[in-house]
Length: 212
Image (cartoon, rainbow, N blue to C red; front, top):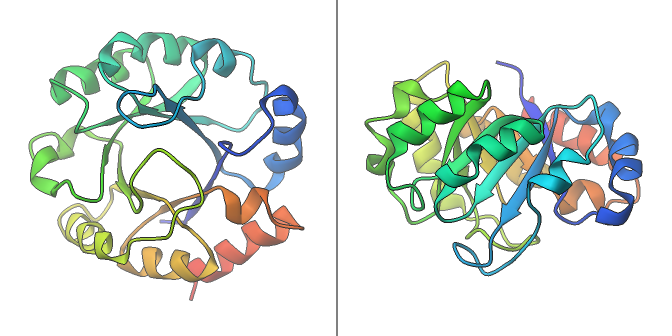
């Protein structure tokens, strides 16, 4: 399964969002849209109206770091999300919420925080299009990669050889190689790409690291 690069837009200037995304589109397989509510995580970002204003041919991967995600799944799907990620820690009924995402025509993903075991999503793994393993505590960009989460990546890969496994947090050309070797297939990268002097070269470095 080819490794995909999901460029995180968390650190971009939202006032010039579409200009930035046009510059990043040629080397991004997806744009990772971090949605934070100031409740589930200690940060506040954007909602469906901002997502709806994004104009790009690159698929939008909306990562809902919010409480009661079921209330907003439809809105984000209608705003243009090609895939929607909810957190195991925030959903009161994962099976219900996954089914709701699928009814909206989006790919369904469930995220696990670093301290959350795989057992929290054991029953719904067969129904997922993707699982997201957080390699930092969610809420803020620029954190250091937590290598201990790679055990979860390895475990899921052994049992689900064809499942898309995304990893998010502290991804660089060094940690990307570790993540892919463990079984990750989609790398979420923010600062490593968007703060690089040459973002295209940074993205290429991630792709090269994934083949080592």
